[in-house]
Picture 1 (tube, helix red, strand yellow):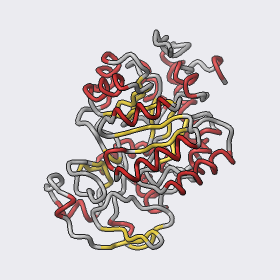
Picture 2 (cartoon, rainbow, N blue to C red; picture 1 turned 180 degrees about the vertical axis):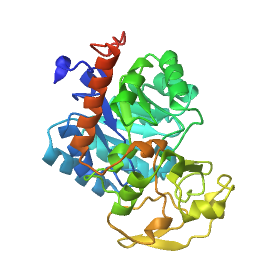
Picture 3 (cartoon, rainbow, N blue to C red; picture 1 turned 180 degrees about the horizontal axis):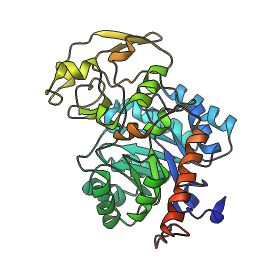
Length: 347
């Protein structure tokens, strides 16, 4: 659609996509089928490859490219991955010349530098102004500002509508809004606050192409926004003090008011599910995937507060089309003919 799209922002040119909608690189969930579908529909997708083998990453990159000629990225998390494995993950991404790498959690300047040296675009998801500034200083090209409403691992403690304009004011690179964005109205709101697009996880988890278990998808559709909780109980596989937002289940109900203060090193490993030959433990950060068997209900059902706005399981294309259509209606209702003009230019 290019510049004829009234919601076209500079980040669309930077990412080579039609619409300013980024699909989150959800670990396990965001695989080739979902990423390719998002790209084909005009958005920008990230493979969620945290703690995956180099062989799987290479296979998923090839699988996306077999489905589309569009650009996409890979999401890795340096601080939650064994250093040797992260080195192998990064190497295979650079070897296959991925368009971008999205990093999350602690800002790791060396990871940014190595990606930039290989002419790879760097996107960094942060939860605070301090980390946004650190990521930009280390060379990140795009900052994703994640509010506490977001699903999955949550870095910060401030709501999106408060955090987003603060980060926009603090950095000179493009900023994308994350946490609570899954509609056209929220896209327009994000643009009004200075973002150049939105970053969606929950909305794309509940799609036909995502690799999430059908139980997880159905629970999101049935959920209200009040049905999510912020907890660090699901902590096996991640460093201490790594909170997540999940749907309530029997595990969180048993915890009562003791939702935080859990150390993964103190948790006894009890197998409750399997992914092939790999055991999945109660209180791990593994969310239920379509190839898992066992006690799925007790796993981490990652979801943001925006789950209350997700009313169906549909295709990624339909999800994007719905967002864009409602965004255009919202702009028309407000008497707007185009997205805000941005002074930022990519050097």
